[in-house]
Image 1 (tube, helix red, strand yellow):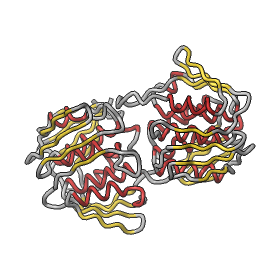
Image 2: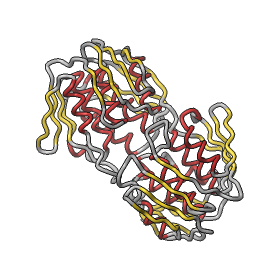
Image 3: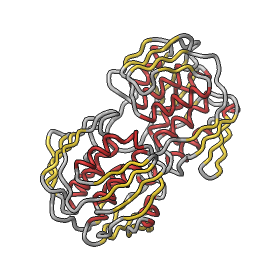
Image 4: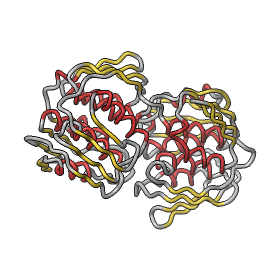
Length: 418
């Protein structure tokens, strides 16, 4: 098992290119199940989660080829409708194959998924939506079994905003008969990216990026060649790293329009943020100002950036308050930051109060989930001494060559065998 070793006290400077978005690539790759023929996807990041979804698609019978950051998928050879536990247990996004398999083959059997320990994240919204389109759903022996003689469009309301349920229902409804309305739909850029790919395939979708998405079913879809959008969370992570180290980093190949909340909060913290086309320059200030942050569905502040900003606020002047409204277990990293000298108290299960300290000190720490891994590395960048972050397999699920990119910016970050 690998670990990341960080020697603190170095100012980051230079340019860093952002990889393709994991959260956009996963549903887009899965959408190939809806098509007969070869789809080509460019700018696909080299991540553990991407490898997992490719293995799952291959197990279903698809032909998958990878050449650099380009992935070719031909699902015309798909012959199975079951996604087994061994492949699904590693990643929650595997549940996204349920909709396309049901839409195309009229039956699917998918193991209940696994993933990071940041909350239950139930899939009831996915299942309720498919039932509203005419599917029969049963849960037996740890598997979701779905079948339908025909899928018929319907008016579907999500009780809570869910990115995964919105994505799954979009892919289910594109081949249903008639019109489907998804109300209280997620509005994240990854939703719009998936809708754009489906539209290129021949789907009829209106309203992606708003809370109401209209899908008019078609009889078939065609292969496409598309580019995966940049990863806004990776971009945000490097932006915070520059700000908290007093650095001067230009983040390239990103989409600033997707990061309004991140940019706004960084400016409030005292950092200088300059946007130029697809690049963002972040210059850290001599003093970091405290912030109040509440995570919200897009376009609100992203829950996937909460841990990184908390790492920065540990050395801010004043007191910061974080309110986590998306996941119930997303403060696991707090105990590890406290080991490094942070002054953080929790209340009510979803509120963290951070009193800034003069400095952090190095310590051995353990990552609990993907974004917690990044926050601990960021804390290590400003801590006195050498910080060792264990269990970084979480990191490899969502960041491509993170330690190498930090090294290119002048950070003393390296990977070792534990």
